[in-house]
Length: 201
Image (cartoon, rainbow, N blue to C red; front, side, top):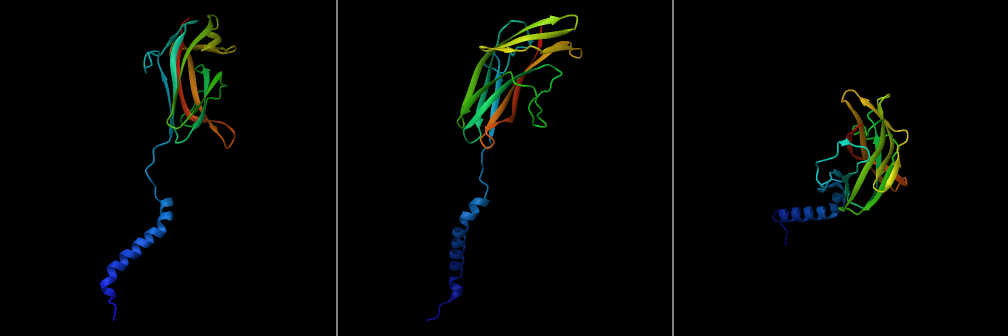
C-alpha cells in the first residue's frame, strides 16, 4: 500500500513547526524582551505638616524647623543607601543633573538606610542655624547647623549678599549615594533634593 504524502502535508508541517519551536524555546527566551517595570529610587522632601508645602524659606537664627526626608527602593533588589547632607551658598557648586555629578562640597552629615525592594524609609528631622551678620562685609558668617541631635560645625562657611535677588542665600542639599559591591564603596546615585532659603538679618 502506497502512502499519499500530499494528504498528510499539513499535519507534517504543523508537527515540524511545533518541534522547531520546542527546540528553539530556550534560545528565544534569551532574545525576547518581556515587559519590565522601570528601576528607580524615589526621593522626597516634605514640609512640617508632612505635605509638599509650607517649606521654611526665610530662616531666622536659632529657630528650629521641621521637615521629612524619604526614600523608596524600586530597583528590583535590596539596596544600601547613604544620604549625604551638604550646605552651600550661591557661589558653591550644586549637584549637576545634566552631567549627573554630585556637588563637590564635602558632606556635613550622612545617614545610611538598607531597604528591601519596594520598601520605603523616612527620616523626620529638625534643623536650625547659628550665624552672625557682618554689616561691614555685607555677609552672614555661620557658626553651626543643628541637624536633629547633631551639632555640625560651619566654621568658615559664609553667604555674601546676593544683589540680584537681594538676599543672603543658602541651600541645604540631600544627595543619594548607592553602595556598589563591585567597588566596595558608595557611588552617587544621580538623585538629590534641596531646600533653598534666605537668612534674616
